[in-house]
Length: 492
Length: 95
Image (tube, rainbow over all chains, first blue to last red; front, side, top):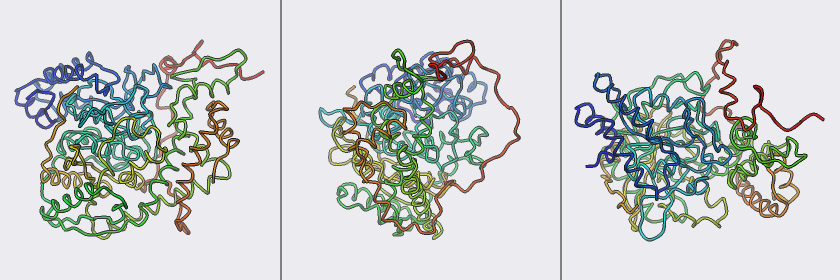
């Protein structure tokens, strides 16, 4: 098997046994990346950094001091600040920005010996569900069923496409409303959004600070456990980083969920849900029941209001966070006409630098925070958010260990197909995932099957706060039972 | 609640985003559509519910009020579109 197709776990074991080297792994990935420009997943390639890190990792492995991630080649979402390497959040407003600092997550990964292959495209400022808002042009899903190019989902679409196409062993993603889990489902890979506060947000370009969390996107649940352990830390530089030690997530993968209670929320059975999604969900329920778990019908009565609450809260926070892009400190500044003052500089710079979806969200956020509407929209949404979280609290207080739902309302759709749709139609992609961000819970997407067209579909498991190990164990059982092993046929 | 063209113009200005006069009707329509979607929140009984401030119950960390970082002006200015003599430069603000 080509080295770039390995999982993290297999590569780790091969490296430790001396059967391969990080340089060989890295070279295989770099060659795969160079042969995959048609996917448009990488927006910056860093082969020199990669090979230098790989050589250092090989020395470290030889010396016998090798953490699990040592020598593992990764792709990094364009949202993470990487020192001296273009970091643009897929936006023209950050064109040319090369941070003078490293995000905590990527620093943790480099400290563990991981290797950076390059930066991965995404929806602009992580706002989107199809990767079509990226300033680099859309990323293409390696899965293909006819002559159409399909979306890998978003916003972590470059990460999803790169992992599914074996351009890297795994990638970092971020998830504000489903941006790890939806693209993972669309490309047949695993993606976990940890509990809010588990992973430091320091050095991650901010979208909606009360919802954003970074997490791994990987080829297996075991890989997600290994990589999450390396990404997570208690970080003094992020005031919302929780003071809770990071456990050994891989050790939690016992494969035993006998007696665990799995909640099936009735509100997630949407009117008009495709029969294939219903069946996939029923299959997943049967798999967990066969593994000895107890299936319990539960109710999360405020589910319906999660999307509208999210589309008040996230744009409100975004309008505040993105105020920093003013053409003064970094990134793009518009060319000014004679006599233009500072307001013209702001307005022209932001009109040129932000794409249409980002502009819309900033303006919606500005509106819901403006005098006279703050209570009616923003405060009401925050109160509804409290109710959504209470729904989950009550379910967990009743003894539920994990909740099983579909990950997405459909499989991957064609690029450009939503072009003329209402912006709200695109927002519906997040209908099953957004509740988890609002409640700050961990959620994982696991590939479970193919639809009749031959495209991957995923199920989502939602866990108790800080119980990622237990959640990953449930996902591990689901993964084993589903036995999903399909890969996209190489056409690129 | 629907957003008319005047409101769209005002919001664009508050957000410091230049929007051409010709583009305002379409923008107003899209913003209205999104707000209509949000109106569903009015169906929820939120009586007695406090607006959420922190999703995980935690007290923000405190630290001593001392300088712990700094001293690298060149790094701070490195990505600026216009930096002069150790400062960020902007169009004239004071007449």
